[in-house]
Length: 384
Image (cartoon, helix red, strand yellow):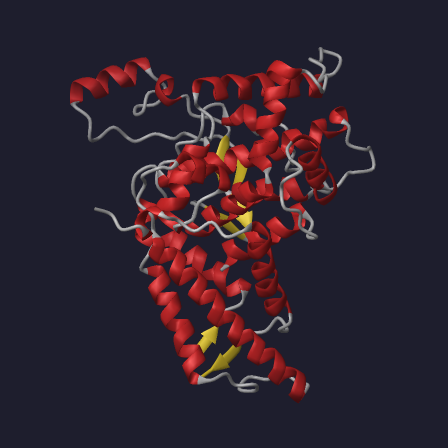
């Protein structure tokens, strides 16, 4: 029998979680952007983290990119080549690029007769192009901190989790329900004189159909992912009561690392303030603190294996595609559902739309901006 711990993933209260993460972010920002050396342990800053990410990406071949159906359509509102891209376009560019994508195997493992037939009938060998309906114009080729991203990492699940906590999927679900049945917010179908609005109508219809047949990124898919890899759950996911393996060890080691890193940065900030300068060797942290951080990192790495099994990678990819598709859709239709024209930034219109069509009176309110706080959590968690 599984222990209670194995079936009870963590779901910190939102206000608590935002407060703790805000403390982590503020502590890190309080230190000048340098690399410190203490007793042969290097505290790595953001640039070095991405150097390491690049090495991992180079050494380990990415798995096949099994994108969601109609990814080309879902992400078609993005214009990554525009001169001044906004935050949402930048999010897209950190993950994807529009270019030809031939997601297929060479067929060498197939029976010769099957290989011959597929080669004649299909433009790609395996899987046949009619099978998974894979996109042909979106590729995992984003740019993050100057490096090309060829695969997803566990940090990207943390990013997805906090965007879910932001309420992106709840907003999308409410919009699609209204578009399909309720009609409170009239959204024009568009015509050939208004190609953008026609494109929006096509995307909305495509999303509705995929929701109806279950090809969207579902709560069950994402909650299974969070439980198996992070040991976390969402509010909606907890209601499902999934009997999924829970990686409670990742949750324990992740928060242990954050607590010890907070202690390190707090001690470093105090010492820097007293000395008034920052030089290598100055403001030395205790060997015990540094050793505990190193041990936390190593223990955390040992909990990563779950990501490489089952549908976890594909669920991550699907979730990110749907988050980005939802954000681009929201940014284009916000004025048609009652959001003021001068709300042009995501930190303005995302909380406003959430309060308008999702939030209920019993929900606990936070002084933090819903978009800014969760985006900071997502990026900080991914960068760690």
